[in-house]
Length: 245
Image 1 (spheres, rainbow, N blue to C red):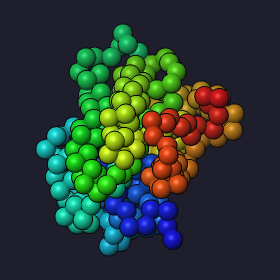
Image 2: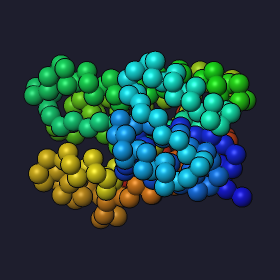
Image 3: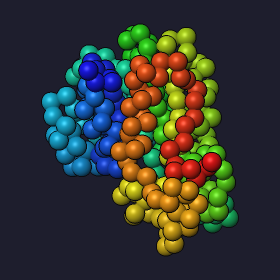
Image 4: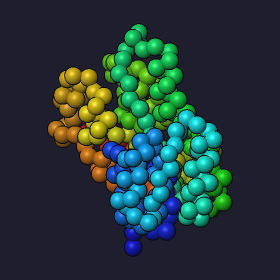
């Protein structure tokens, strides 16, 4: 028996990196998975690789109407929704004094408001299903300050706070809301966006002395999505090799 047998999951930002690993592991453990992303070719490839219990829907998480299309598509394909992983996100580097208002707003729109729209959109379907599990993917940038990550860090602090309020608001409907806090993870986004020397400096602060893998983050998502975590809501769990210990 899989940990999430007969459950239906939506994973945003599922075309590559952490999201793709989450979608594959949830499917491996019995879930039907709806993968959403703006990267159409990569997203379709992940869904095809998983098989008949996966669908891809092109989706901009900042588009409220797009969220409803995802909810409707998931219910149409698989009948109900039990799991939402708010994984989609963007990273930006820059100090407060060097960050434009447009860039700040863009990052907050994707990382925090996108998740808010997802929480609100999925609530009726999960309520109808009798409950569910929502996992928000924040960052260790949401628990401590760092130079040069003003927009990203602020958006993840906001997401962390939003999840705590949603955990309270959704509890009566048996919908759990938890937050994971990944540290330095070996993903395409890390490789493509980190300024020179940033990864090496972050590595120096990791007691386990290595980057994490998307699959290690996915294992935590799977646990929180499963009934094994039935009494866990409003929690924040780091997966960071000890960086915040």
